[in-house]
Amino acid sequence: QVQLQESGPGLVKPSETLSLTCAVSGGSVSSGPYSWSWIRQPPGKALEWIGFIYSSGTTNINPSLRGRLSMSLDTSENQFSLHLTSVTAADTAVYYCAGGNYYLHFWGQGTLVTVSS
Amino acid sequence: EIVLTQSPATLSLSPGERATLSCRASQSVSRYLAWLQQRPGQAPRLLMSDASNRATGIPARFSGSGSGTDFTLTISSLEPEDVAVYYCQHLNTFGQGTKLEIK
Image 1 (cartoon, chains in turn blue, brown):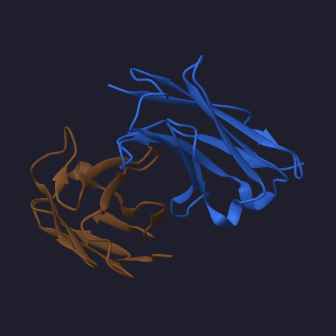
Image 2 (cartoon, each protein chain N blue to C red; image 1 turned 180 degrees about the vertical axis):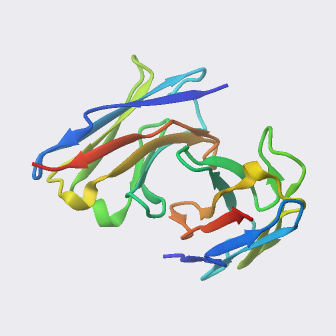
């Protein structure tokens, strides 16, 4: 059974960069045809897709975040990462990592990131 | 960009009743639709893929149907643990969710 675990700071200052990592166990981030996704959920709101990265390293990013978002795979550590620059209060949310073969079969428990000075 | 519209926004039913949740896509998604369940304070989990295939460990009281633009998630007999928000999803798009309450 594949398990995912997010890690990163819970508090980020406005205009700074939000960096999160998702550690994968029970499976390999480099084995196809899985894709590895980031989803976020502002407090009390619906899920919002951020982007995903294929095992090949190809990414697909939410157009609303293009220019601020990058994602990467670290096959040596079996993890994938998100970097979101120039954050504002609107980026405050629970951030989930997820993965699967086309569908989101596996989810992390989520991590709350608050953007505040 | 495909938009997914879920109805109703909130559903309040008694234990043992049948729940019917709807998801409508702004254009055809064939059968490439998933249903997710998010219990209070928990991460979402996959219930259904390809519109009607139950994910591993999902009870048989959950069923999905539909294709093209109209999809339904049915819970045949509600249990207290079914209290959750249910989302439909296609690729990079989520619906706004249906909140299921048990009376």
